[in-house]
Length: 350
Image 1 (spheres, rainbow, N blue to C red):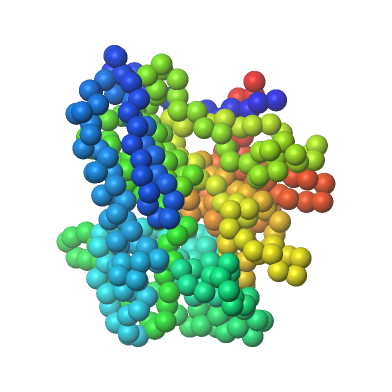
Image 2 (cartoon, rainbow, N blue to C red):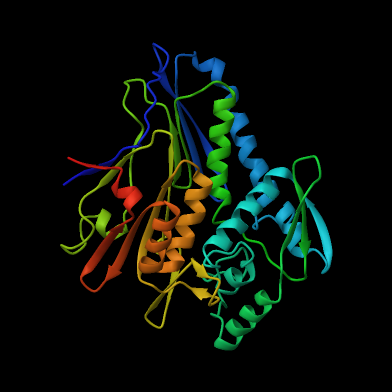
């Protein structure tokens, strides 16, 4: 049975008469991006969007990428102990939001866990797929936990203006990969809205946000991401039932899955989602967590935090915070699906 998710609020604003879909796209953050805009303007009048949208993404990379040594984040990570560093407004806001998620999740998500991510081979250097990589030993894991426990990130907002500064206690490594991509989706959406474009679909590396409708009046339909075996139709009979299609109208969606980046060692799967509390990859058998939220930055960060928390604690927190979330648990019999009540409230079975 096909299932569909519908937003609780639907705008009656129709696209301009004679609208067509204009396509833009490129590469950023080690992945691709794409934007579809429904508008009646002639193509030549929207050509500036290609460069403008790319520039927005380039700015995010220049500020928040842990892959670029010269980014603002890279400079913070290399800063001397006991120093304050000024952060651009967007970087400061994203880091502040990430720290709020860290607090609300009880540390299941931590933007300051970059050293742990790097140690497990999921950072820019010493990667798990490169020759010579060795997974951290129990002693190294214990050292990582002790190191992080002794580091306190302090943020101070600038008085009377945007932005602020961050305290580097010494050796603290920021990693915003679980939130910056979602933020970039929101940034592209705000860029389009600022230019009076109200009907669009934005995608960066699989994270999406939609607004308005297509020229035919239909919403921007997207399918919730499935674990590969289920998507290929080869999963056991008790896999998650059927496709879930989402009307991406004023909503964003992000998925964290253990099938995206991982390595196998000793018969075990080690996924890229690190549990900062244990300084090791999350090992709760969750194949994926999808979060639907008005903000893609929030959907991105919370899909990671809920993945670390696991199906029981994650679902409880989603209920408490009113998050629309889908958990897909991998087990011996195939897959088991759990939906939070806010997401079930959006379901309209066909």
